[in-house]
Length: 427
Image (cartoon, rainbow, N blue to C red; front, side, top):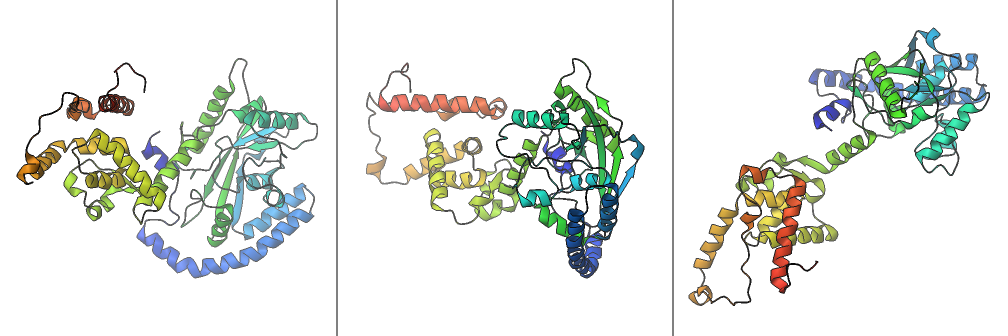
């Protein structure tokens, strides 16, 4: 997963960086606030009308006109390509309201996969699957039975399982939606709005709705593609990849292998990690001269008890491997990296500095303290750390697994020597 690619697929801030657009947004803000309050009042009436009228072409037309007043404009091209016999639609995912927009054009149901059930689920236009759906296999079987029921409305599924900004690429399509039916109709969705981003990660659907009421308009452009049938011998994942490539070509974006889990991991990393350059001078790490690192936000403020004990425990692990490095230096570097392996790697580049400081400290002590004692025959001589963590370019570029194995082997030998065990004993 490339961080650069995933950064382009999502908007992590609501407001634009361009100063001129920010100025226009500032001037528009009073109008936007008035529009938002007015549209909230109108939106309540839209909801009541959609609940009162039965599902029909007339209802969809009236609600679509009222949604235009709310700033949600829906356009479609090639409506004749829509297959009225299709049992499954698959669409790319851009906003929290994509299923509502498609429902303004044709009657369909979208199952709620995550979130609260009950009235809120029904009010948002989702279909409840009931209790007892605990796995993708059970979900697929339930939806397959639904599609085979006579008179059931078509299903609308989003194989990406999460939203993107719709400008750079598509998330990797999950294979389970394509196991529901062997024939599907792809739907390409383009969404545009001025001033602000279409969505940002971890923003609630209610907040996104208020921003939709704030901006002048949001345009949803729906494109119907011809139905596609899975070929004999074609796996569900191959079928999903084929449809993903087709939709990516239609939208003018790329087809990626980034999954919903990758997005969640990237969001978590951005939430807990900030650039080291903003804090290096503050915490006094410039003298280490180590490679650029990251610092966890949880370590920037006053640490709580569990965090203190965690850092202390990590510092002791580093101290066992690098006994000549002062514990204060180890602790400061751990606050910077939040990783034992990275701290060891950074400090190994400056072991000579710590050795010289330790030697100078010993030389300045009283004579009775510096008198060398004859080592006991039973006292093991610690092996140099550089034997296991060299300073050559090859050692510096060891993989994480290799470094962990070397760390374990070094710690094992030190433990055996300290406790007088045999080398063949299991630890």
